[in-house]
Image 1 (tube, rainbow, N blue to C red):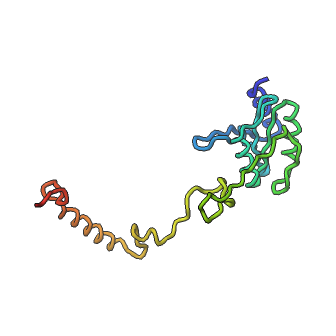
Image 2 (spheres, rainbow, N blue to C red):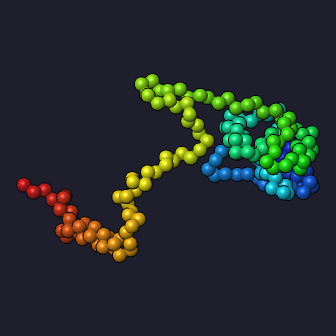
Image 3 (tube, rainbow, N blue to C red):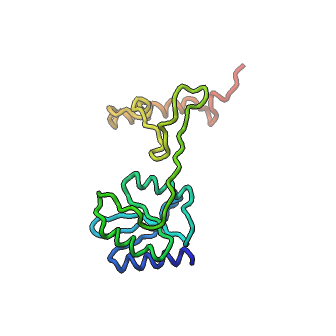
Length: 183
């Protein structure tokens, strides 16, 4: 049996039970579960559907771990016989409470690697993970050169005029004075 058969039967069963199972696609994030399942009131569950006997790839297991850390239940269903118990568990579940265990296919736990200190480096990397923002927090003092928050629109115009005049003075008939060699 193919994954598409399991997925189609799951979507029909969710619809019949009064929910929706949106297909999840992302142009920027790989490994997300196949379906976002929603039931009233505010029941949100992610579901990965597989052909019988197939297992989650490592990246899918990582996304499952990340979503669970955010408090979302994530199920894996690989057999038609798992559909009805999964939907019953979702319908009976109260958001904020732990989701019942043992629903759907068994998914091996994600092996989380612990980073050790780089030889010669004083700091340990053990507390780093790949679950948050990739951008460093910006120190406001680093932005002072770009924009002064106390500067009003008139001051910005004056500063822009000064910069334009300075740039204009560096050019003589389309040639930058810095490019002209003087001997």
